[in-house]
Length: 96
Image (tube, rainbow, N blue to C red; front, side):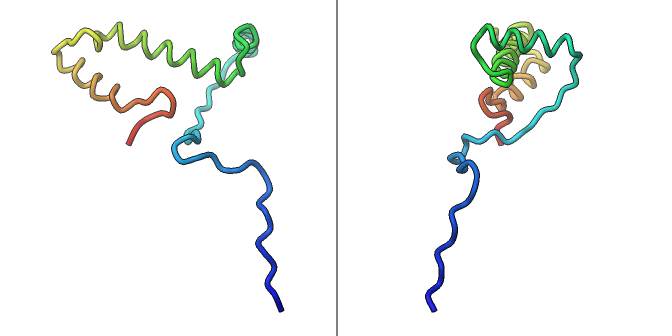
């Protein structure tokens, strides 16, 4: 008796290695904040998730500027922050 081939998997195909989002971050916001985010996303022609990711990237870059990470400060705090910042990949979270 011949064996039947495996049925095709249902659902979206897996993304290539390294392209899948691995971490989910949950944040509680007020209804007013949700409306503001949805409006900003719609105006910029983005999904709310994409808009939030871009807003976080902008805030991260601003944090780098205010902590002198880009200015080569030699304080221990700046060195530690630079070390941590090198591990952050803005497109996919923390690098191994």
